[in-house]
Image (cartoon, one colour):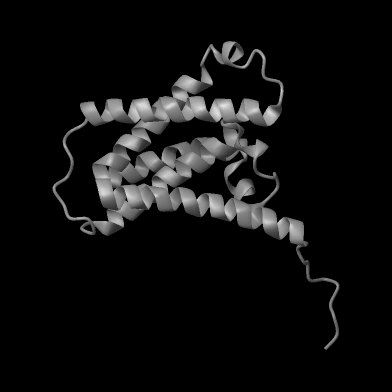
Length: 170
């Protein structure tokens, strides 16, 4: 059998970057599934609403220059911005927990398909934020297939709408 030059092969660096991004995606999805099973669907709805609220606040956050005035290393700047986003997301999720109706009275694996759908919606939101708004690309190498799915600016609006549609039908 003769070796064909037309078959594209990925080099080891590309494979490692793809695996690290895939691991990132799977870890985010896994965390949301664990939250859905242990805390319930309403908790995931609160997280999704908290993520939207955190996006709104962090995009217009006026104090980044105060927080970052003496930091020059780009990965530290990215980490600080991610920490600010995480803190605002946690506070917003807690706010929505107080405002939203009480938890659904269901078992851990009851309505599992809805929990998976909400976990997928939250993962889509985190992925689209990661590649369009948050400085996650400081830690991940650009140009992988997952990034090419979530990073294009013309798709960002649709990735923002998708979790709302999932919540509407759940």
